[in-house]
Structure formats: structure tokens, C-alpha cells
Length: 240
Ligand code: GLP
Image (tube, rainbow, N blue to C red; front, side, top):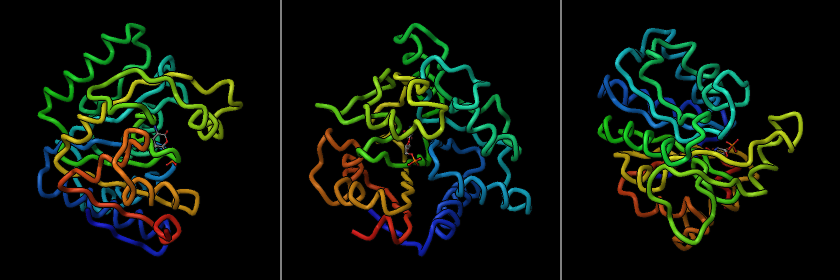
């Protein structure tokens, strides 16, 4: 596990973007596993900047996102498809046909999950998986549980996750209570993993996840077993 401590969010975003850029430069047809949440926004801004400066070409890149709320239309401004379009895809030359997010409108849960696992499999897995970290240690929407879930599955969101994500909705009642998420096995099968963490509010969970016991009660703790993980954070998130 490599840990890169940046002085602030902007610097952390630059470092994270440099790692993703290196992946795209080394393998122009790579598969990027992408994440949503407020943390990677600065990283995506830096990638857009590099693209506009002519340093990056996304024309052959494929992307597979971690998760999507169940029941939200792709054009709902709180869906993760909408997030990806408006924070990255609309501003770079990625072919949207090569970008994948779980189908939040698929009512048949088993089909939604099976289809997504097939997409991951057909792409030969993920080259570089970008992750944020939930306050309870969730990655994607893999919530604390009694075991590590393998493939894509439908989760009932933890109350604390609904509360944390309520800031993006008009009220907590509007936050979907279910989501489709890539499983821990798919995440662990990525060749490289980049975790981005920022802010004082993440310092306790960063310590627990990366320096505490490996347990499904802290889903991110399993990353300690991955052979190629880089954590990029600001001083506040890494202070413990
Ligand atoms: C959501 C997403 C996660 C993300 C987490 C943390 O629940 N499903 O992928 O990592 O929030 O978000 P933030 O970066 O806003 O703290």
C-alpha cells in the first residue's frame, strides 16, 4: 500500500489525476473503474484540464462505474450517470457508448446485477479502479455487512449513508434507499486501485480502514490485501 499525503484537496486531486493520466497514457484502451461522490470531483476537473491542454486522449478508454441508485432515471440530476456526464464525460473525448453505469431503471434486480457482471467480465476486468471512502468504510455502495459481497448486487443503503447523501437531495426522504453496486470481488480484481480521501471528517475511517483489522464491518479494510493500492489524501484526512 502506498500512501501519498498532499497538503490540501487541490494537490490531492492533482496527484490522483496524474495517476489516472499515467494509466491512460500507458494503455490508451484501458478500462477505468470510476467513482462518484464529492471527493473525486477535483480529480475529474484536473483530468478535463489535461485533456483540454492536449495531454490526454480518452477516445479508446472504456469506463465502468461502481454504482447507481435504484429507481433513478439517467437524466435525474442525482443519478450517478448524470454525475459522470456532467463532471467528466461531457468534457472529454470519451465515447459515451464505452461508459458503463449500472442500470438503475432495471426493476429485475438479478438481471441488473447479472448484466453488469457480464459487462465487467466482457471487458476483461478493470485496469485502474478509483475509489472514494464512505464515512462507515463503504466502497462503492458496499455497506458494512457480515461478509464481503462478491459480484454486483442490490443493497439497502445504511441510514448513515442516506443521511450523508441527503445533502445532494431536497430532503432525506428523496434519497433512494436502494442501489446497485459492483461487488468487493470485482473491485479486488482490478489490477490497480486508487483511493482518494479528503477532509477531517474522513480521518477516523481512514485509520480504521487501512490500519485496523480486516473485517466486512469496514468494507474498505479488505483493500489492505490488494497488491497494488495507492491512497491519495490531503493532510486532514490522513492526520490520524
Ligand atoms: C457515495 C458513493 C461512494 C463514495 C461515497 C463517499 O456513497 N456511492 O462511491 O465513495 O459516497 O462520498 P464523498 O466523496 O462525497 O465523501
